[in-house]
Amino acid sequence: MITLLQEVQEDLQVPVKGLISDGQETIREAVAKVFPAVPHQLCQFHYLREAAKPIYEADRHAKTELKKHVRGVRPIERALEERNDAEAQALRGYCLAVRAALTDDGYPPLCASGLKLYHRLQLITHSIEQIEKKRGSLPL
Image 1: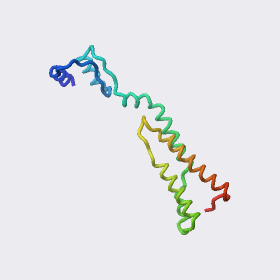
Image 2: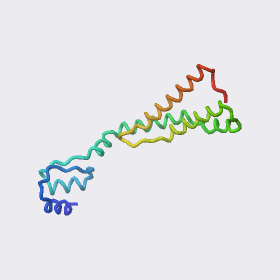
Image 3: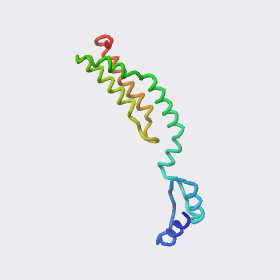
Image 4: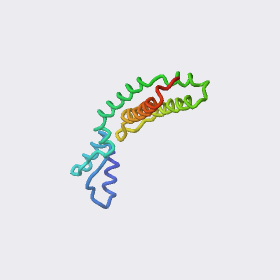
């Protein structure tokens, strides 16, 4: 890495005013040796990812806990296999919505998939509650 940076320093026709990298130790050491007076910082993505690690871990744990509460979609789908009425179709739609909510992941640090899952499950719950208010509970 030092050799590469020295070549860049020799071949560049402009002064190096700053460097950005992912912060690997070998890169830091090489930059410090070849460009000792030049500021060196982590790129924004890597910096945010490192800063968000505790939040990401908490979010991941929350998602795991939420998934425990909505297991059992498959038995409901099996119970509906013989039915083709409107209620059965609506229930299949809810099962599909739960499955989609469970499998939709984001990429840290920019997306908290646990919060996204919580929000989607809240929307599904609210929708079911609205139907229950209008018609009573949904039978299986």
